[in-house]
Amino acid sequence: MITKLPDGKTIDECIHEFPILKNIIDTKEVFWVNPKLEAFEEAIKKISLNEHDVRDAENRLTRFAPLMSNLFLETLVLGGLIESPMYSIPYMQRSLENLFNIKIPGELLLKCDSHLPIAGSIKARGGIYEVLKHTEDLALEHNLIKLEDDYSIMESEQFRKFFSKYTIQVGSTGNLGLSIGIMSAKIGFKVIVHMSADAKQWKKDLLRSKGVTVIEYQSDYSKAVEGGRKLSDIDPMSYFVDDENSTNLFLGYSTAAHRLKKQLEDMKIIVDSEHPLFVYLPCGVGGGPGGVAFGLKLIFKDNVHCFFAEPTHSPCMLLGLLTEQYEKVSVQDFGIDNITEADGLAVGTPSGFVARTLQNSLSGVYTVEDDKLFMLLSTLIDTEEIPLEPSACAGIIGVAKLFVNVSATKYLKDHNLTDKMTEATHIAWATGGGLVPKDVMEGYYEKGLNLLAKRDNHGLH
Ligand SMILES: *Cc1c(COP(=O)(O)O)cnc(C)c1O
Image (cartoon, rainbow, N blue to C red):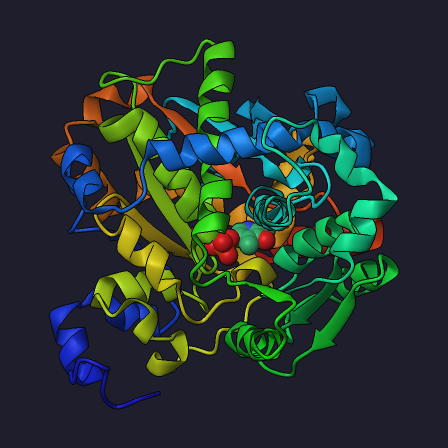
């Protein structure tokens, strides 16, 4: 715990200014409504990225589609694009009502990025996009391709030999490493993944089996990133995927939005001022949920309400936004340990780029205890037969919190939404789980069942 924040305030002064900070420091669950949320047309003026950048990323993924469908057979059904299904989960919705003893009007959907091809997590969007962007940049720079070419030519031995001269490095809590590692190795790059202490063993094993070099750290995510960045900087042939600052990752994630719009249309779900959309996104460093939220705001503007979810022990984005100190503060500064089973979310310092970009567009951030993630995990398997990893369950509780928490109730009232909730759609973004080995998933499931059996009779409050 530090005594003073970078802006010179003491923690006590900070608590006085933001009373919610007391509960955050005590690792109690909170629901924070962003006082800096602005109307979309105002907020977007301050953001350097726009819809042309998103379209540019979409077009790049389309150019790579022929190569992707050759390299990864599982992407063939979608013509070489990496996309996930979205399902209505009415049984889970009923279970949440029972667990929280509330009524949840509207419809609850699950966006299954857990089932994205190749990486089994939301990282299959940003991570793979950034590797492809770098691949294209190198190939163009060396006059090996033209934008109009059929990119499947890059599968050839000549290209692999060319790419094998280059290294890609990344720091990760697990899933980003998986996505960057698998994709880069397939193209032919040398890959080094710098894994934080919380990364699961099976993720390291899987990467090594693909020929990826895994360097393990005894410390948390920011140290793994620091180590990777250093090693990469001294090697002119090495490219560092910078999760804390990368606009490429961010734009890769943002391409989810147009595709989601299409999925909603196919499901005959309307989003407009009478039919609000609520989206709950698990947040680590912020790139994944931030990119998706940015894409959604560009399309649905003030009719979409985006909330981030963080573990009570890793509320880095919440602290960064609340104190307006962004990447300058870490959870450790507030005496919070950054230890959580939700490994994708075990991040102590938020991306300053994402925090600043979304500070006027995000509706709020809530925190969840680890135990609840496991209870939700087991309940989702029992009700809908969908297995997720613990981090991915952080989004599911959002809809319940919206109807339980007094500051959420006030948010609905202030935005004139209270009477529209029967027409609302809620999307829990299921960010990962597809690659979890069966025995590990069984362990999670058992743990959740035991916790559910032990919990008192007051539901999940
Ligand atoms: C990485 C990850 C997130 C969050 O993405 P960030 O870009 O780190 O904010 C959420 N869930 C899972 C399962 C992840 O792997």
